[in-house]
Every structure is written in structure tokens, then in C-alpha cells.
Length: 321
Image 1: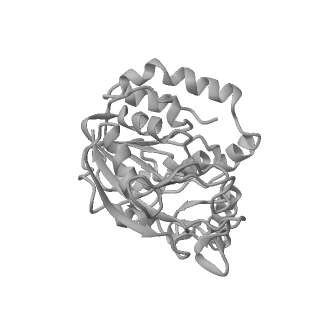
Image 2: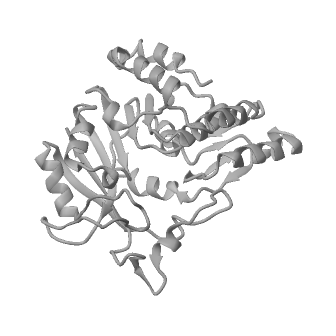
């Protein structure tokens, strides 16, 4: 069973110690009452992963752990078979002892778009909200972050993270099975990332205040979200589905998003990147068993979703508390 005791020991000695007032009770409740029906099977798969000694770990330029020569051919095949039991792999890619986990999303593309615009992460405490399997957590650590915490309530993503952690073994990178609404006002992180989350929230303004409550004074918010073209008053509220997703609530224009951030008290708000999501960034691979972006677009007009809305366009916003 996954234990959070080491995490508790770590934060007891750092600026997150006040989180111990609420966190252990939350995670104990989660372990007793909220485990996914497949959790025991995932845990057995995790426990069966081969123990290896990587000759090199690169988190700065990629998420690459060891080389194929570090393990036997039998261990490589076993590794591939076990990690495929955690499909679908959404965010990545990962390279584990020569095994290329070719995830649905090329999350490295997003990282490359934002990394030159954010503050230096050296020695910073970093929080990533809605982090998925944690690909960007590793890149944040590779960029010099002192302590990295990701939260995501999807338990399969947590198992994927722990599969990678099995090989990396870095106690300064952690993922907790929480939603943002379960966070107290920690006011402790130098940088908070929230990428691909805002449009899934029924109340985006409340969400922005929740993000702000996690930052130290002067701390930096890095927010990436779906947007639409338009003026400061333009906000798309889709019907039952957007690009086949049910839980999409608000897609603001860039100008509207800036106005929302400023209304919530953020300073120095700027848009640093706008990009139309391409089919080479989100696509089907052998590591997922579901549809992907190509299936979500109008086959006659890829500038529109299958429902007739503007195709996914994303922007990155940076602001300070």
C-alpha cells in the first residue's frame, strides 16, 4: 500500500509543516473509503516492477531514467508488459531503461513553450495542480526546484507517477491524490502551475482564488487553459460536450482571462504564448486505448470541433500574487 509517511516527515521539517494539521486525516480517509476498484491490481503491478540501478537520470532535458543496457532483455520485456497495464498514459513522454512510453500528449512541447517565460525555479517550492501522471513535476525538479508537489485526484495517474518514481527515487518530488478544493490556504509555494484545469472547473473565479491562496506574497502563477478568440467580454460556455469532453464549462478569450486574473488581485498579468493544439502534440499511440484529438475534430473542417465549436486553442498566462 502506498504510504505518505515519508512525505509527512519531510514537510514536518520545511515550510509546509502547517499542512500536517489537515493532510493526514484527508489521506487516511482516502485510503479507507475512496480507493478505485482497480487499485489493488495496480498496486500489485507496481510492486512487481523490476528493481534497477540506473546509470544516469536526466530530468533537465527530458524524463529519461537509465539505459537499456542497464537491464537484461527479460527485464526490459517485463518492464514493458507491466507499464502497459497502467494504460492509458496521457502525459509524457518517459524513457525508462530504453523503453519509450509514447504518451498521448507530447507534454514536452508545452514545457518548451513556457519554460523560457517563467521565473527561475532554482531552490523554489513548486505546486502543480491537476498534474496528471506528473511529467511536469519531473521537469520542474530538473529545472532546479527544491521541493515539488503535484495534486491530482485520478488514482491511475498517481500509480503512473509512482511507477516512474520507482526508478527515479527522488523524495523531493511528490504526488498526492487530492483536488484543489481540498487544499487549505497554504500560502507557501513560490510557483503554482495550473495547466489544463481551469476549463474543467464550474467556478473559474473561485478556482483562481484557490490558486492564489497557495502562493507566497509575490509568488508566481503559471496558468495554461483553453481560450477562444474575442474581446474582453467573450466567454464560450459550451453545451453538453466540447471536443467530446463533458466537463468543459468556460472558455474565455485571452483578454477575458487577463481581466479575471486582475479581478482576483493578481498583478503583472501577461499572456506569454498562444498556440492551436496540433495533432502531433495530442494523438493516439500504443500507450492509450482511446480516441484522441483527431477524433475530436470535424473531419471536414479541422478548425472546428466535432460539435462545431472552435478547435482547441491554448494560452499560457503568468501573474504574481
